[in-house]
Image (cartoon, rainbow, N blue to C red):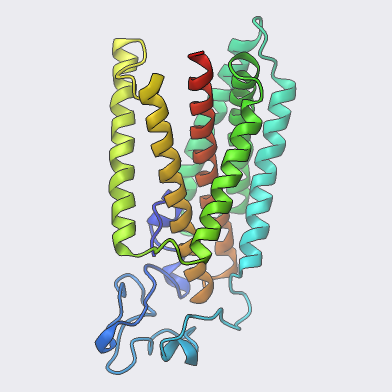
Length: 298
């Protein structure tokens, strides 16, 4: 299953190393769903998994895929470790930015400028990694460092000038969404399939286009643009953003699960960590925005 996450949506994990594209659950009549884009899931008569060198005997008989025994393949532990490392760098740099970049009246413009500069650099690094054929741990960790500086400055401003405790509330909210989606996904309450993917992508495209139009009106017309990111309407769109982030998480979980099952190379765990980090940053930002809106209107 391809994810809506920019990292995953381009090419699954790695076409050159045995896994890419959609899961290939067998259907009636021996056909495979989503074999397009997966060179190891081309159906053959009587055995839709004959071309997958990582498919176990249980998988060929229709059982859930099992992680390959081949060494050098990605595991859940690899994903957890890389994601922890990436988030760790982000948290450390955010804490340093919070402590070292003051937001008093004399320094707030300079600190905010540094934060915006770090956000732009992080965005460029994210695009570079998204279009690279292979994961670059140094690039991913550098992205996390700059993203952390931006989040540290922004969180400090919101926490100290708009809503006391906003940063911690946003962190707790993000953790709650992550845990809730993970439990729902593992319990099978969320069915990640092509229809789900198509719906999320359409909703995300509409959301991004509306935010872009709102930004253009704000830049050229002044004020809050069309009001999509302020007031009651801003809260509504913030909630929609969080729900989209939760959908992104479900798609990313499916991507990781399929990558492990079909033998993605171990280094691809860095891509999983990169994608999950970006999704969690998205959710955190939406929570922070909602908290700021609610408190600024008091």
